[in-house]
Amino acid sequence: MTVLTELYLWIKALHVIAVIAWMAALLYLPRLFVYHCEVPPGSAESERFKVMERRLLKYIANPASIAVWTFGILLVLTPGAVDWSSGWWHLKMLGILVVTGVHHVLMARRKDFLHDRNRRPQKYYRVLNEVPTVAMIVIVVMVIVKPF
Image (tube, rainbow, N blue to C red; front, top):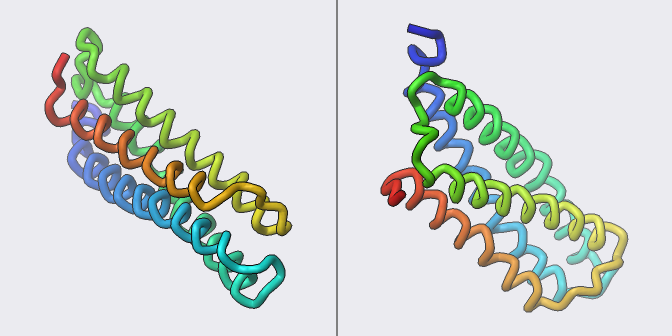
């Protein structure tokens, strides 16, 4: 029995905890951007949003994404954890890449707000807010149901 096999349930628990934190941050950040669009650049409210956005990324989203990827890779490396002959994991991986991509887009948009250069409307952030939700649904169904 390998160390990863012995720690499998702990790694899995930490992975799920990190996923919850990451998703919470990715669902909240675009909402902050929606509200940030409503205030004048350089205003006290805008500066407050900049602090909130930075802290959300720095203290929750970024560490959680690193933890998700770290624990996820450890789970994949655990002997017998993934049936590589089934196809569900391909779609799960695509979902993970989409969520990661959204995270990076949100980091770039935060820089736009930081420098008072946002040119995107609220609707953009409202739509972007739905992408992690759809990806999460796909990921959870693939992991739990394993339909193919």
